[in-house]
Image (cartoon, rainbow, N blue to C red; front, side, top):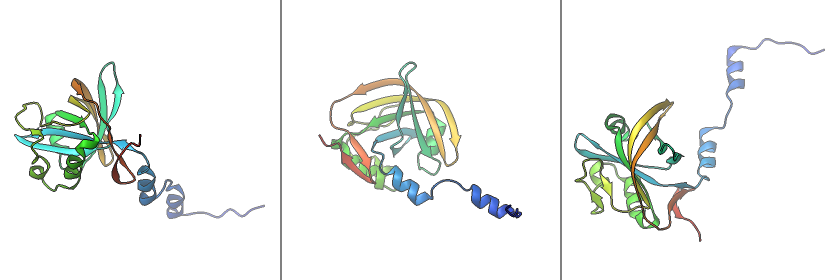
Length: 176
């Protein structure tokens, strides 16, 4: 017969701390090839935007997309306030724009190329991309460090071309 020994709260907490460490999880998630999307909006007349890998089609009827934004992202609060924004799925010909958005410290740097239409009242418009969507927030869900946006699709336009993806922490194209 075994001996029963009492355990303390620290032992219980350690035993219940399930899940991988952060580095292992990030490494595993880097293996998920993801499309790249620019999400842009106005913030009191100034353009704001970010590059996201989280955009997915939620439903066709009704037309809805879903994406998540880290609370610390520079455009997070503007997206919350405005509730209207554009999303552009990037192609391989948009690599320079993806790099600019990934590395730029300021909105002025992100929107400096001539490929931007900054005269559209709905949202700043990128001229490239494979698909562009006009979106309006339908629901927001707080999820720890992120906000999940469920957006109604108001308008959509498409172009042909190869997609730009993010895989193993780098921009890539699909082999084909």
